[in-house]
Amino acid sequence: MHPALVGLGALAAVGAGGLAYAHVETKLFTLREVTVPVLPPGHADLRVLHFSDLHLTPSQERKIEWVRSLAALRPDFVVDTGDNMAHLDALEPLLYALEPLLSSAPGAFVMGSNDYYAPSPKNPARYLLPDARIFHKIDPPKLPAAELAAAMSAAGWIDLSNRRDAVDVGGLHIDLVGVDDPHLDRDVFPAAPERAGGGAGTAAAPSGLRMGVVHAPYVRVLDQMHDDGADVVLAGHTHGGQLCVPFYGALVTNCDLDRGRAKGLHGWPGGRPDAPGGEDSTWLNVSAGAGTSPYAPFRFACRPEATIVTLTAR
Image 1 (cartoon, rainbow, N blue to C red):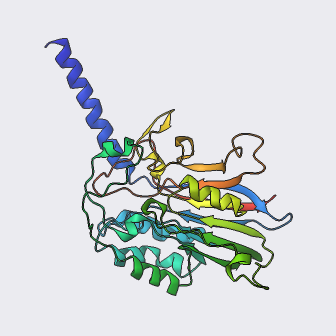
Image 2 (image 1 turned 60 degrees about the horizontal axis):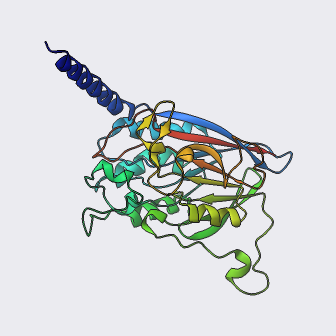
Image 3 (image 1 turned 90 degrees about the vertical axis):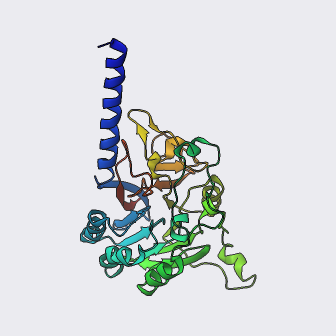
């Protein structure tokens, strides 16, 4: 056989094997753990479960059971940074998956584009463009975002879509701020409490912690949360790059966040934890997410994840 044909055959075999593994990796759920020193001195640790981008379809029984199993971690607080659904009939299985968490821990949430609109087939090369926000349909099918928000709110979780709130967890007062999905340009950063009413008595109570929550970590929102005094910001959307190159990392983030912060714990606008001199930075945890579009069911060198963010004393 001609050497060129042998080479092409070997290349095709490697490609097929890589594609097969990339499909398998979508089911290799993992738990990442990070520690963030933001609590007042002497305060006991607080464990926050952060998950994102489930992109759930009714047939994903393994993912459903994995999400249910996260309640066994007994987090003190739960944050869901959106893109929960990927099918018109996903609401009921999603609520079944979330039920152990909804019934056992306080939480907060924001929505992503795939809470509002069903996914559709897209050319993967579009993600290499400077801005990949293209809908292939003028009016894509709508998902039951309002029903999802109502169910989570009824369970006591806080809807942070363009609003502020506060919660006391484990003896810690947490001021929360969030925005609706910046990827859809739905974000409107809420006014600071002292400006909201324009009168006396509108300032916020002293806070033990300030936390920002956003689906897509666009630079404009991260800057707003940093300027607002957030100690830590939790985000998703990037899928960690989804298809990564070993020893190189993510190729894209699907937003204007740099590739170096496609997943994991970093500082914003820079510095910590991977370099000194970041004392003025906000801690930023970007979840690689736990799902994919059903039209691109592949992950490579980027396992689906949830994160335990242990907040500890400074």
